[in-house]
Image 1 (tube, rainbow, N blue to C red):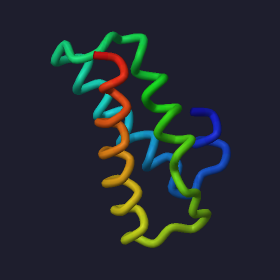
Image 2 (cartoon, helix red, strand yellow):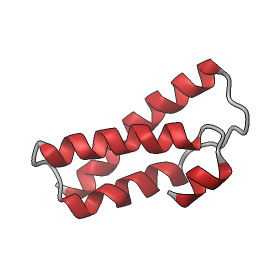
Image 3 (cartoon, rainbow, N blue to C red):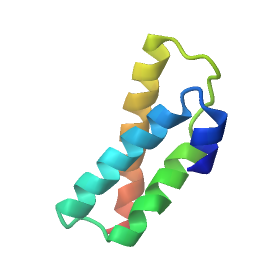
Length: 77
C-alpha cells in the first residue's frame, strides 16, 4: 500500500477500489478482517501502472481492481 502512495499514478485508484470491495465483503461476513490488506496488496501487484492516467484510464483501473478484488476475496471464504 505504501507503493500506491509513493508511486502515485493510477495506483491509489486501484488501492481504493480494492479496499472498498474488501471492506464490503468483510462487513457482509464474506471474509475475515485480516484478509483486507492481503486482497489490496494482491490487487495492487496486478495493476498495470500508468504514471499520468487519463480519466478513462482511471475508470478502467477502478473497474479492473474491483473485479480482481472480487476474485481475490474468494481465497478467504
